[in-house]
Amino acid sequence: MVRIFRVYYPVRTLVLLGGDALALMLSFVAAVMLQYREDSLLELQYNFGLAKILAVTVTVLLLAHYLDLYSPDELTSINEAYVRLYALLGGISIALSVVASIWPDAAIGNNAFFFGTVFATATLSGWRAFFTWTLSKNFMTERVYVLGNGTRAQRLVDVLRKRIDMGMEIVGWSGALGAPAEPQQLARNLLDCSRSGRIDRVIVALEDRRGRMPIEELIQLRLNGVIIEDAATLLEKITGRLEVSNLTTSCLIFTDGFKVSHVHQACMRLVSMTVAAMTLVIASPLLLLIAILIKLDSPGPALFRQKRIGEHGRNFTLVKFRSMALGSEGPAPVDRNDPRFTRLGKWLRRVRLDEFPQMLNVLKGDMNLVGPRPFVPAEERLCAEKIPFYSLRWHVKPGITGWAQVRRGYNRTIEENTEKLSYDLFYIKNASLSLDLLIMFDTAKIILLSRGSR
Image 1 (tube, one colour):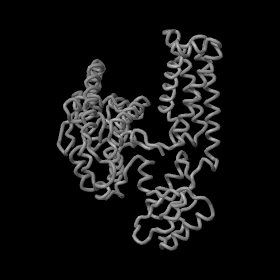
Image 2: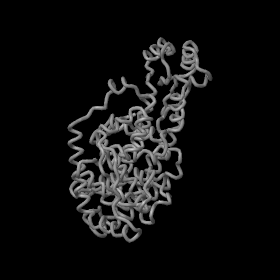
Image 3: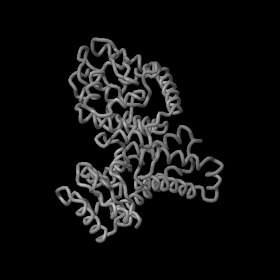
Image 4: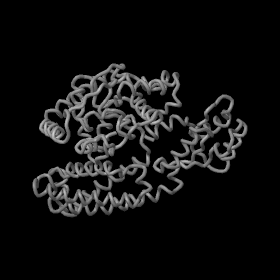
């Protein structure tokens, strides 16, 4: 896996992305060479042809990401991926035609963009077919042995079997032995598996390692070039979360991360205030219209105010557009069909326009654009009593959006809030301006695709 923006991505996904980018660039360059022939170099270099092709390529890749063409599920749902790909290229072709008619200087003449789209359809189809074929080949697969038979090992096995993009084939698992095995049995099973076939990586997922880990066998495998990795570390990379059940005080003290960077705090504060001020100014006519429509749709104020817990456990008043009927305050809505929503409020929640007044909280310094989502005091106190390390969320400013918001849905139970905390802790551990920008990028994807408030 490769770390980008403090988040790990599978090599397979990056290879697919790189192949798509190369196929797009070559397709449009080939179209220019076909249409301009001996003048193609002039068009590419001096008429900004390469810059225009690069702009189209980046746009297509961003839209492909927004259409989930790089998600793990799409690697197993080939037909649906092709439908989305062809729909995307068709839309790009129409958009380029419209741009060329309105702003001719922004396009490449001689129908080069049209032929480039045709070439891109063929090259992307061929590249993705070849990529899908390689996924089933042994030379693209890493053989993995999972050493452990507890709940963590079972969770890891389930994740690896589901995530085809990881490129890991489980060739051995201590959990297949049934009951908890003795150290000698674990060592024998590991050696038998290593003799019967090549092992590239051993993932240690033992719940209790004292006196049970086959040290000598692992050292021998390590000297033979086999990668030895901890299950908790790999699960963090794959899932983008820190499992609360695996956290200890020593993990928080000695692990890399959880460093409060004053530079990051200052940069994020500046970005948050700038974006909040610009949003309130630019969107003020829309916000005024929404306030009027809320008043017309149902009795009550346009704004909803509620106490929330922020940085260092201090209370502040959060402001949102009212999306529920007056007097229906209570537990947080569990889905968009909650009967307490007004007709307009249901739509506001779906496109997340109800969140816009929180820009005022950002300007006041109560919140940032990105951070853990703040809850009401009663809910926060209950979670702090039931969930270990929950108060760590209060060491950073809460946010309008956050890592947990773009990775999971509503939270109703202690178990679901524990999972939400695991994402918040990952964000706190890896907090950086690049990760904040990635979260804002994914938030825009959620809003544009109307996936609702989280």
